[in-house]
Image 1 (cartoon, rainbow, N blue to C red):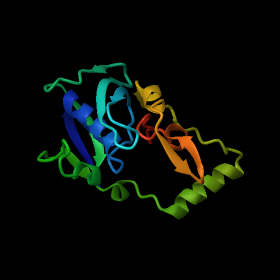
Image 2: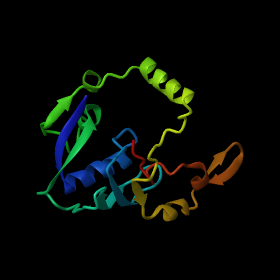
Image 3: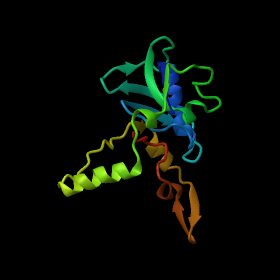
Length: 168
């Protein structure tokens, strides 16, 4: 189930930070870019959002508690205890399969049809939405761990989860 909410700039910043800090949190975004500092470690991030910019160029005041922005979020993310959505009623709720039914076989048939027509390139937007402003500091901590009998730096073994957030 998808839910539609109005969030202030401060709440939007909190949702983005929670998505980075919690590996099970809502970390897929679209329609905006943001910058942040990780004040923790790679394993236990503590995220400070410093800027948010909407796709149309609007800069979101991350301290504003009056201006609202519409967001769509899956119910499982909105219903997490302690989230900014706690105690809020959604503006709208809908079950996506009822409004836009898609089953695996239909999707496979569409992809096969595109393949057969030579339309094999499916454009995607894989640009980064979030930029960690102190990523190089985190990578240069010198933390080491043992892997297969050899020592390698933590940075070499750890993907930068939380460094950039991709949108879906």
